[in-house]
Image (tube, rainbow, N blue to C red; front, side, top):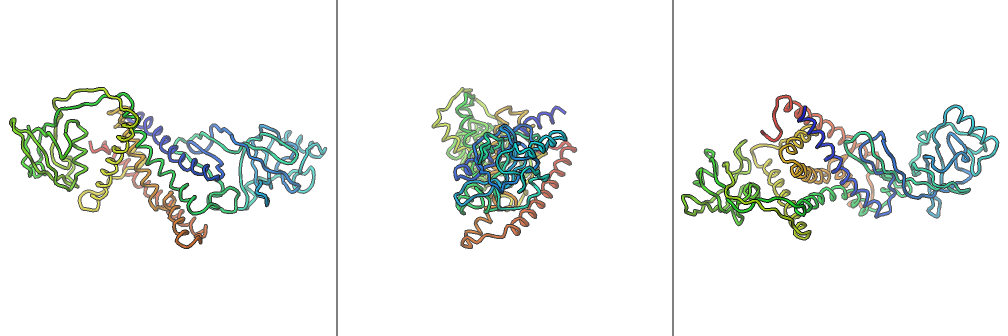
Length: 465
């Protein structure tokens, strides 16, 4: 039970953080291009908390239809829903306004107010005093902007709304940015109305933020006071039979002084250099019985389970503990190089899938939560951040791939439009492709999650322990 408490308590905040980082990319880029952003949500509905910001004016005309009440019932502070179009001058014009439905007596009072003629401005439907008992969702049209906001001011010819919503929702499993007209160029301020370049940037911005996150996270880790082990060397404690280490003539008790151009004094440096050089011959400098020797070692791309790329186990000896704080410019450089190293390792791993040996070991949300919990329990905050960095890189790569329903799938249709000289794929056909992709992704997630559950029941760690 404690293990799962740690897993959930560590994974849910991580998922929220990475999704919010991703959505901030879409949000900031859309704002930069003047695209109407309707909502930035943390978690998924139903809403727990909503904050309404902004200042949007929408004009009232004799043709404005008010649902559930008269225009005179609109008051500052109310949350209303509006269906707005554009006039030739580019101003928003309210065609339908939906007020919250009142109870029996509130509705009667609003009717009396309307019949008495106290409501100023345009009236419901085309007859003063009549109240349309419909919902805004019943109005089927793609030409208008559907926005919700808190009323700031009610003027004779317009309503001023705070219609940019920041929401915190009850299901803490992600987040979203809701834009005007994502697939409808007719809607005012819509994403779909923008050119190919702007739409491509907005769609790719989420993955760009996930790719930037590891650099920033690594840099912060280097700037925060931290302890590093310096000096020392790696002493081989065992050599697996028929391994590259055995072929190179390495024995237990040998001290590895240098691997390629890098000293091997920390537990991270030796495995990192080995993985970065998988499939490539490396020069190792070792010490045996007080004498330095040179060995040529070629790490395996797909080693047997439990052996590692070279086939050794080792211990770090003669190290010293040093407390360090890196300046921002050094931390930024180390953040870039550390992220690049991680990307290189992932690239070699992917290439290894196609070169024979073991295939990819996939984990769904359950498996990732289990991994996060195990690493957090063993490595604390630093381990948690490293898992977040790795997951952020995975999200960046996955989302940019041309997979229907994901950002990369939508980018593919933007690219097709560019190739066709601006001719768009019909929205119905694109929607069908994304629907098929969604069903396929859902089936894959269910299959992977079933495997995660089986592994969990059997007590098998996703980390191989």
